[in-house]
Picture (tube, rainbow, N blue to C red):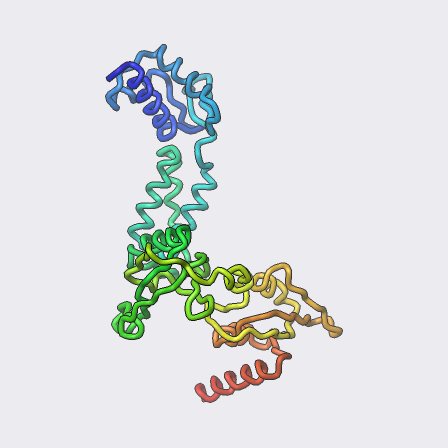
Length: 331
């Protein structure tokens, strides 16, 4: 190997050693570095390693620094690795919490994330985060579906797929006898641990849950439709108005809530929502635009007597009807 190429390989190998074998609690000495280089098939002298450390530290725009810890048990270690440990832990927790990533793929991704820090810190990434009731997907092709959809959005193409639902055999069964859906994707959103694609079809923008899509195919010879509709579309408002991604007619709803539920309203509708204190001092009113669906009524019912729908009369009447139906079911 030419000397110049050999020097590049040596620097890269030494950098990998610093990333994986060191941190502030585990510095390594230069003699140990020589041994680790030898284990990786590179012969080096102590003096050259000192020069290499200086070279690595003097490289322009590097996101790291190699520092020396003096005294007994001292040596060199890397600080400012590509990710801080807290950042990696956050990413690992997100992988654990994601329903659409299978258990096997979660393990693979976490192992890959661990390579961005020392092997000692990597042990801390096996956090075994408990996400109550979390059901992990069994379908690894979802990741590739997400990639295909992002590619279509970037390229401005349409996509084709089959849309499915769970059946009693716990299998994904295609809707409408396997009918192929052809839509124009515009944006991907993340809600309740699931990916959704918002796409233009049949004259309007709709959403589809990605883990229910099968045989996702980008159509390269097509042009995406719905540009005018998407230009006027507010994704955040769309997501905020829906409950558990269930569609329904948009209504301006006034609710009377107990004061203890102020946090619940802010969590659901954001800090921009207006809470109007009632004269009784125990309640407040809130007016929000929502897509009225069975999930909305279920959400309201979940607060018991803490929330009362005041307006519009049609939504109030439908809430009463559903409560009467529930009462009749449990008589």
